[in-house]
Amino acid sequence: MRKSVLKKIIAVSVGLTFAAALVGAESHAVSYGAASKVTITSKDGANIRENADTSSRKVGEIRGNKTAAFSFVKYIKKSSTSSVNKWYYLSSYKGYVRGDLAKIVTYTKASGKTTDSLNVRKGPGTAFDKVTMVGKGAKLSVNYTAKNIAKESWYHISFGKTSGFVMAKYVKLSSASSSNKPTKQKKSEKKKPNTKKTDKKKTVKNTVKGFPDSYRKYLVPLQKKYPNWKFIPVETGLTWSQATYKMMQNPGANTIWHSYGKSFRSTVPGCYNYLSNYYYPKDGYNFYGASEQAVKFYMDPRNWLDSDYIFLFNDYKYHGGIDYLPVVKTLFKGRNKTLYKNAKSFVAAGKAYGLSPIYLAAKAAEEQGSKINCGRMSGKMVYNIFNIGAYDSAGGGAKNGLKWARSTSHSTYLTPWTSVDRAVKGGAKYLAYNFVGNRQNTAYLEHFNVLNGYSNVGTHVYMTAVYAPKNTAANTSANYKKYKIHNKTNVFYIPVYKNMPSREAPVPSQSNNYDNNYYLKELKLGMSDGTKFAVKKNSRNHNTDFSYSTKSSCVIIDGSYASRTRAKIYGLGKKALKRGTNTFKVICRASSGVERVYNIRIRRS
Image 1 (cartoon, rainbow, N blue to C red):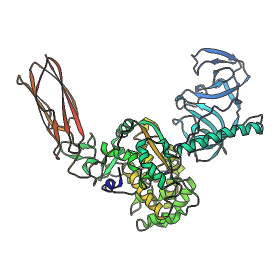
Image 2: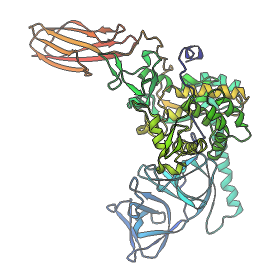
Image 3: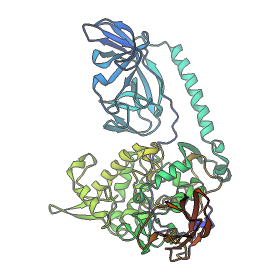
Image 4: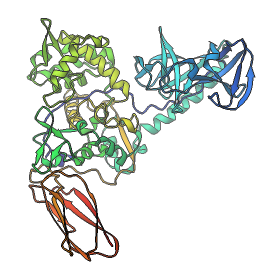
């Protein structure tokens, strides 16, 4: 979808959703810890099992107080840190010993560096509680490897006084050390292949060669025009149909402003009454559920691969050497006096949490508009600059956001937010921990949460307006051009899906002469023996499958559509009935072109 078409779409709000480099890291888990050791604490010794299960075949025994090397720790429960739910794999015995019968006495520390911003958790999995967050490029001590029930590898790490577990594939191991220090020769031998491997990956990932042809036709000209730009394909692991289907299962996760054309609006149950032509509001009274066509249009990455909208996939981390303050002031000037006066707070918060101050400022401008979301608490004003916790409701989400800002239960994020400066810094910390740390680190991923597995698609959406990422990109590009950083080294993490259609998802019609009402108002069946069936009549019925029995030799199918914009119906008329089951399809095509199929099965005895 190119600019000439995109310009026809109303740009209702302009915002900049955050990002910091998290996507596309390629470090792989290594079962470090050949010299990591446990001591058997049971005086009676312990059985060694073939698998991490007490019912598994016994493959040996080990006496009490004996020390043995382990390769990794296997956790057999999703969120339990209990010793009985973890097993040590003893490499020399080729079997497992239960955790409550042993304890770690030494482990080999390998030095490593994070390739992304990561959540540190109490156990090896996202179901375990979060301890803290570690930024990209942080140096860690990697103690040992753990594996969870999903067979994922995690590292137990230490940094400073903190320890916990992080996903192994986002940590690059640089060297290893044990109680017996490795020689210089071994050290150089280990580094050499690692460096070579990393360089090879960068060469592949930072060109357009890793993308499907339907992406490359847009990226090749961009690469030629902007040689400093890097395009990195991010495999979602999802098919296009899977991702879009799951994204639309939660109607409240995708909303559209009231002035967009009717084809942008959803007509599924809960969003629309097809008989009265009434759309149910989703946030306040100006947002409605977005249609399937709208979701697919905004979700298709190929629609945004030009010099402006490409910033939808931009790596929005904090970059040193950029004078952010004048850019931030420009974003607020003439829009919001209070935010303008607090421009320095955005720069300071961005630097503290590794987020682009431009992103933070644009997000605040988008959320606040010309006024500030604030209220009183015990005589003091409370602010919520980024509308954290302002979940959608029919009465509007701003009030919910102020309740969140008042609460002392969120003190990790500096609440209560009794000043604009405190709200900016606390909000920035929240964004860094809960979105960047959740692999939602671009404007696109902040809405389309497609890198955390199928079950999480359509959840954890920061801004429900489905067009927000597109507006974010346009605003970012304009500001980058103004301050001459548009053609600098920018990194774009672009999601790729399996089995994508050959052509990009089309833009819905902006005209209100077309809508998605593909429902039948009434469907009537008349049998040759005089029997009649009224399948639908003056009540909402979303069924599409109907079965009847008759002795008649023919049936007359009649019906009418509910749309106010002249839908079309196919499959009506007189139909002969053969003995046995007869299946007929009636199709109602909305004025926008979307279709609904009604299946009618009639068994003639």
